[in-house]
Length: 339
Length: 133
Image (cartoon, rainbow over all chains, first blue to last red; front, side, top):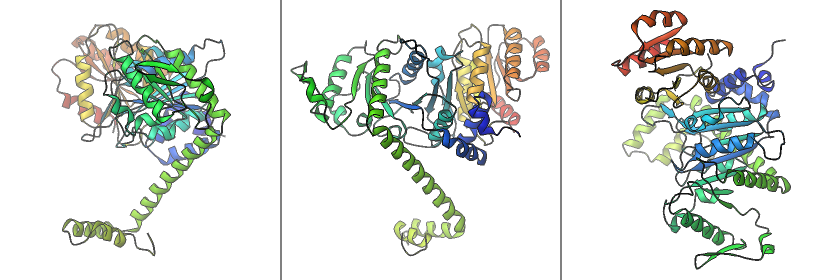
């Protein structure tokens, strides 16, 4: 009996893996079949999200992180590491320049590291529509650590928090004042906040700003800032029912400084998730998210098949002429008792 | 063929020791603007690194920039490695300073196109699109 494509992926065949990733990325029938066959084998990997503004050093940090994972200090068997790096697709040409590998050259030659670049292909949340699928393929293929690097993100690209177990948000010194740190959005999703390029001027201010932000969000935090001095509270107070308090860390990704601390924080977060019911909760949320996205897509494509393009165009023309409101148009285009 | 949809994936690599990547970047940019997904690897790639990146990224095309004169060593090595990885269906295009007398040999080895200084990016785009049909 010939080995199926999914079986070849499970057997660790790299060519089968890379071709499977392509099928899944392109959302083909074969890709779907592979994902279905692999699904029972997923759910084992630690999914780590890395996000932050363009130029803060995400790729360089991912490079160092993968290197450090592959050289464990404690002499344990190093995990296999997969990296999914997303860069933006041009809204004009549909093309993309995927440059994350440039910063990851140190990883070449290690057969237990697999880097895949992907273009966002029109998605806006910092990931591509197929990123979750690619992660599932890597998970089934036995990669214990999967690092997902988002598009250079600004304030609202928070999809990564849904996908990853642990989210690292990278900041660089000198990007705005304290008001930036209390806005909603990307800082809220961080399990670990990294101030990269911490040898640059202003790093102390950025670190302090982020710690202050956290002391507002988590008053039980055992650090607080008092007249510019970091004061320590009673350690007892830390163990609140609110759960994980984000860790703030300085790093210099180009030299690797601070990366072992980052790796230890990731392990601590992993242990924390596993020892509480948060791991399970994250898995449930992610699968629910995936199911709902699939349902949405399926319903839409079913509806598109059920209606002739002429009717749609006619309704659209009426809306453009202000003869029909968009809301009325929806009611007309989706017939049925209740929306 | 790995990629069944219309997005052409191209790996742009600088092989060997020369550090001039202006040409590679111009081509990468032009291919991006032609709607392709271009993976740029950076400077000083060994044949092993290029083949490995081509495998991981499942590209249709490798665009290789060589200005150092080492093409008669590097190209056969890359083609051999691609074959070993069962990536024979990957098209290889070459840019840079390639003397005319080397071109027949390189074409015979399996290089799909060779482009010297002054080539219009439109020519490269069309050749890649044709090779990927």
